Length: 181
Picture (cartoon, rainbow, N blue to C red):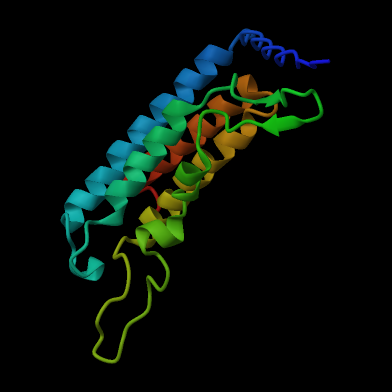
């Protein structure tokens, strides 16, 4: 007697994501804020130069951070929330359009060189980024909001993403107008 196995049933196509009122606009608002933050970060990099002395010949990490913030905030995808394992025995958490390796690049300390931003070596040689303290705070707000935006997609992002976008814009505006001075 010959026994044949039936082929596995093809996985059912996931239901298309249905946007609720305000969700598309929320995604657009955070994407726009991400683009403005990217422009601001690039401007800070231009002020310092593409390869400032504190980078020891490497490209200014503010340029990478600008690209990362833009990519994260323009790639958000609520439809990528996860999926059922084909055998129906579990759930695989989604990335909401932002791969983990990209999210890991959102590190204000490691990527921008803020560690030791006030430290000096024996000859008063600067270690780390020379951004003024209000700009360092702005970088941290932007990065924090970008990281939070991904987590926000798990909840009521139609309400929360515009708030994060406004927080980014406020931080950028407060720095550019030197309101903290």
